[in-house]
Length: 62
Ligand SMILES: [Zn+2]
Image 1 (cartoon, rainbow, N blue to C red):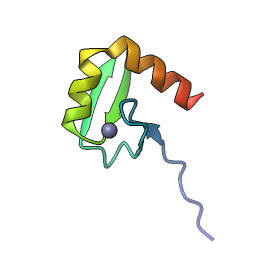
Image 2 (cartoon, protein in one colour; image 1 turned 30 degrees about the vertical axis):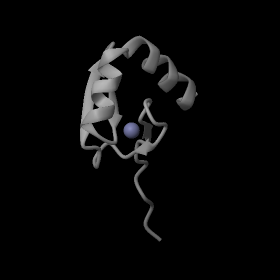
Image 3 (cartoon, protein in one colour; image 1 turned 45 degrees about the vertical axis):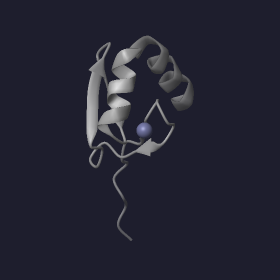
Image 4 (cartoon, rainbow, N blue to C red; image 1 turned 90 degrees about the vertical axis):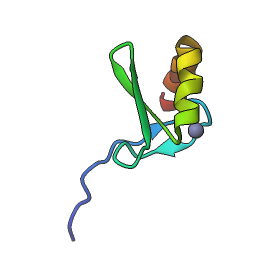
């Protein structure tokens, strides 16, 4: 039985959707880490208030 490599699962902090970095259509970098989004719209939303959404992301992934 082959073992699946551990794939990073990250959350789109705008809508809370789990994103696969390899399939994410939108990505941005803030404070030295990458954030993945389900759409450009949510990436733009994040960039309007990165402090707020970065806090949400930290909480969701804790
Ligand atoms: Zn989203």
